[in-house]
Image 1 (cartoon, rainbow, N blue to C red):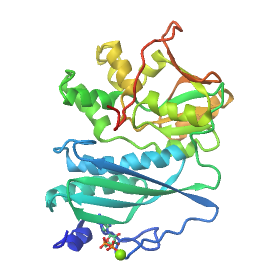
Image 2 (cartoon, rainbow, N blue to C red):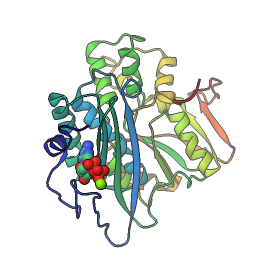
Image 3 (cartoon, rainbow, N blue to C red):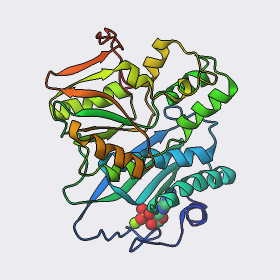
Image 4 (cartoon, rainbow, N blue to C red):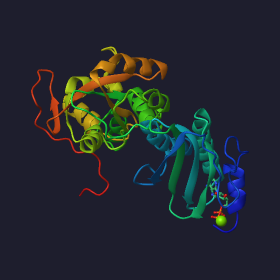
Length: 327
Ligand code: ADP
Ligand code: MG
């Protein structure tokens, strides 16, 4: 982008540095990690038409682009430090840039995570953020530590983002208030950073849920060489749309609820495991982080993943996760 590129960066993305040694404006940013800490690094790209609708509010898009990245730091138990933003824009659209940068910086400031650099180019709308966090050496939460007998937990709510997507695509009808609440979960996920750091030394494994519980939990099972059993009723209890008092809860078909919770995607909650004798410590971490957690099953030595109904019967159906390259 020739004309206006540097003015655009200065106007919307350059702010005084806080913790970084050097921020936007030079060839590289400079960070100084604290002694004894490891850097945790992750990138996530959002592509129009793939990850968001063209007409989405730029403020929520700015929030979400950073939120999905912070969610990866949370899953590693890392504290956010800084991020870079690589942006392709079809044109310089001032109101759009204003909204996008405000949404992004509001979340960045809430987590003390500063924008230290990036790249800006003309092209189809595409947003790639790389986040940098820090975690005490050796204490990062990994996918590989789950042990047979461990409990499996998820934070917050499952399935509501997928329910919103189905409603926006016209596949299900929702009352306006329910759609608004579910849409909030789709467009403005809350990265569970406080919970992730509180789970250091407690969780035996962790990841964040982006593609759907069954598929994402499968990554823990594979990395840890274990299997799992999930309790369908406990999983369904995580869906906000159907929870609560019977007066406000939505009467949704059980198959739809299961599909949204088990294979929904876009949840950006943490899924983690912990030894059964750490239940008290998990509850303490949940309280300290002000983030609810729900126990949904347990790790087994037997490989594979089984979903059991309230009567303990294995449910036959398979729930595929979202895969960008699946046919
Ligand atoms: P270079 O030519 O060295 O790659 P650029 O000309 O692309 O640098 O960018 C100039 C400065 O602006 C660099 O410090 C870069 O990190 C920063 N920058 C570019 N785009 C963004 C953006 N979208 N957000 C934040 N910083 C940006
Ligand atoms: Mg350069």
